[in-house]
Length: 562
Image (cartoon, rainbow, N blue to C red):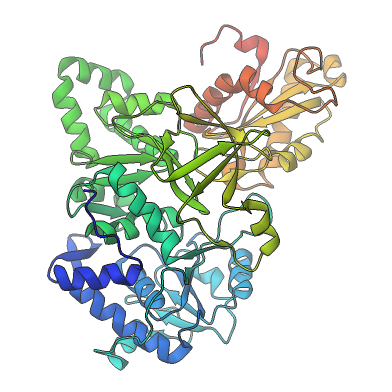
């Protein structure tokens, strides 16, 4: 509950529980039906030994050390060791392309790379600087010169680091996905990792010693705070998902008290349930025949019967999806945060409005600028971007973080995200899409005069177009063929999460007179979204389900319910 210890550093929590509850299990790795566990004391001893070795090798003044591995107990143990030695972890995603990984390792001048099982190692190994020390976690052979984690423990068995952590010292640099160009490193110290979750402790009201399932990438700050840090604050138990193909099994057997999923995860679980039952009609019948029994069965299937709090965030969640889970007796709560500022605005079970991101938590201040941008102020903000003072100055202005999101607030204090200040948006996968480059590529299509890419919270992006004069001389089938060819050409050049799933052909041109253009002839994206958003979202969902690109004319869609 909320009476958790409020300690200043991450190491303090591990040391506290190693003393208070030394024999209680903290971490559980899984291989099939076999579990390997670490008690708080065992975790402390292993992390300390590795920390002492790292301190002897690299000192304790903030040497950057890369991380590349799937989620596993040794990820957290190595993370604890690096920070306890006074050094800094730089996590890489297991799906990261070589060019981005090369940039991050060189930009941070990482002196070592901790490596475990990862799907991209064959590509990453070729770009790791020759002088970088490779530390291989148990069970992984990088097939290059390296030192094994087990050797490190043997060499420093029983040792402890000399370093004493401070709340304001840099301890990790997670890199954001970014909108364009290379990602930015968001610096985090102990305080910015701990304070947001300490702030949320009262709101989430977790059971004593709660259970967590770690399945989203630990390279992302959300997983590290919501699972790793919360497990430290609440003396929780963390089970590591063996593989995404075993997610449902691991959820059902772990029965987490707290579970976070981006909207795409909740959508996939929703599709999995419907597939298991034979469709929505079959679910409706089961609920009609035995509502309570069906709800209990499906809650147990998902492992959510003991959940204290279920969070959906990182991208907009369709209200219809939240309402579908509600029919199963499962309450999803939308929340808001970003790498620069976490645990800010959330819905709570007793204070919730579907479609909003919730209300500000105690200790958080928020304001909306004249341009409509959401700004936040709170204790425990990130200190800025690594080696990018000019970028830091753009986002961190005074005591406020300028989020880049447009927002509005209703009369009851609930906040709503309405778009991006710079016209970027996130799809349901939680990844940024920058419309202008995609629109620029699509505009090469001769039958298109005006266009606008939609997709905030969608399964796919959707291009809304106004046809050119040329199109009026062509048969509809010919126009459709040209649009389809252009979609395929553009999709072949952009990342998967940004690909176009459908095209809507508008009935009339966008003008100043009909309110679609500003007096300076700039497109009013909000107006396009207001007019076409619901249909676009429905087409995006249909495209994702059918696995095909859809071309639809507005006059074909009139009167059709989304």
